Image (cartoon, rainbow, N blue to C red; front, side, top):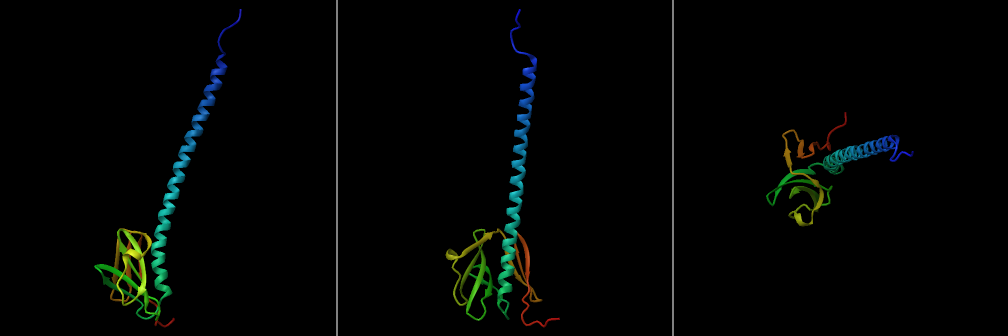
Length: 154
């Protein structure tokens, strides 16, 4: 007499294969989530470095006597970095949650509609201290600008 149905070994083999397949999908989903978190963290770090590094680089590249000043223009706090003796300047300020740069003549008003976006920041505070250091705070942190021109090397 013949037995009808399948052997229990086949069901056991299918069950093991399904278990391995479920484990594989779980591993892939956890790996993708971890990768996404790492990329987001790297993007935040790059954004921080862009904002603070750009401010520092602009100030250092134009390090002449009186080149870095803080002014009030159109109700905004503006960090003005004069471009040598050309009469032009980089003017950095916040517009709608974005740090922007406006390059133009020192004697003209800022033009927020034509300004170039540097990066997102909800905070932009510029403070000129008594010791000549200019403190710039953004969401990314704080950078201290200390003009070195005119100082003797030690």
